[in-house]
Image (cartoon, rainbow, N blue to C red):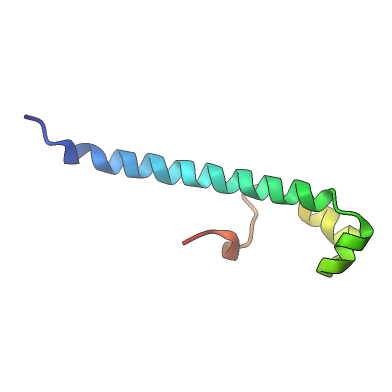
Length: 70
């Protein structure tokens, strides 16, 4: 019989890679939603239109570390 434990590290690395992809998709969705907020909504969250525009334009991988789930 073969030892299936030999395949576990690859599955773990694969799931970690998928986790990163899902994280980037969530960041993209959040930034897209931020870009669509009107002036009143931006005022409610304490952001100016310029701040929202700058944040929405950032690349996917440039997200604060506090956004990453541990």
